[in-house]
Length: 90
Figure 1: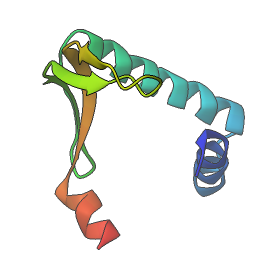
Figure 2: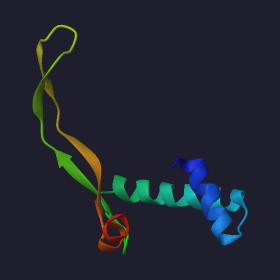
Figure 3: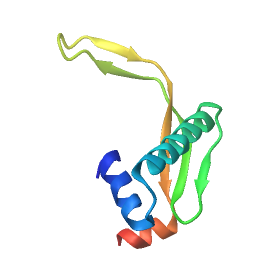
């Protein structure tokens, strides 16, 4: 399911116009991104938690010439599914 399909599905289930759903979804995604950028986590009870994790520096290989390169440490977004989501999937 992509974003357009998600918007259509939510609009169908709630009888709210697609344009309104699209604005709300964009606001939720923007707020989530802003919180993660600040280092905060976003918890949706029953669904899961979005948080920021630090990926350690590591060595890798350049695929063109096989030369070893150093990959810098990075902050990466992560998601941990909540019990409600896990139960819905299983």
